[in-house]
Structures are given as C-alpha cells and as structure tokens.
Length: 125
Image (cartoon, rainbow, N blue to C red; front, side):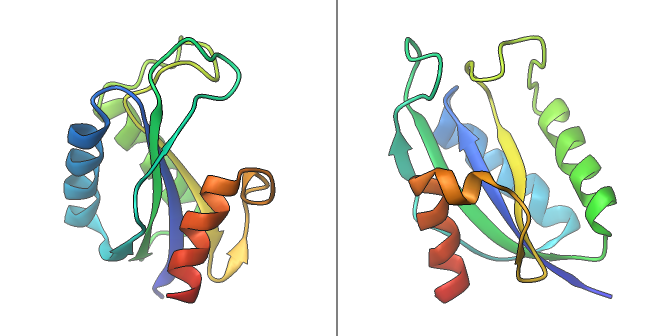
C-alpha cells in the first residue's frame, strides 16, 4: 500500500545545495509529487547562526510510518548531520514527517507559521 506523506525540510548549512541533494536522494526511493515554495526563516532558540531555508515535500512511499521516519533519520546521517550539536543549532538537513495519510502528526505544524504555510500549500494545492 502506498502512503501519502508531507515532510518538513530545513537547512542552514549550504541550504540550497543540501536541499537539492536531499531531494535527489529522496527521489531515488520514493515518488516525489511536489515541493512547496522555499521560505527563509530566522533561527529559533539559538539566534546567532545563519537563517534557515524551510519548506516541505509531498511524496508517496511504500514504507510504513515508523520505517519511513527511520529512513529520514538515516538520510540526515548520510548527508552528514551532526547530532551532537544543540537541538536548535545549525544543521545540514532536518527532515520531519508532518502529515501522514492526511493526518497531521507533528505538533510543530500548529506552532510554526512557516511550516504550516508550506504544508498547507501542498495540502490545498
């Protein structure tokens, strides 16, 4: 069974290059449907770092939600994400499942306007 999913994306280390690379890697294993517009956002928490580029991608996957979440974490690791850095510190790539089969599964959707905007663009578009 195919699952419909929207993944939130963020990067503030060479974001244009790393988001492009991540989309290329993701498309090898999953059916990418569409991505949102990219939004430049100020960092949250630790503010003395580069702005982030954020957006979202809608895709279809054969993975179940748990497998797909593990896949995303492995993709972050493959791209060089340093998990020893502070939670709100700089990152090469950040990938989170926000919508799974039309159900919002990430609470950040309700509290982060840029994420809501990107996800809504894909839900309504």
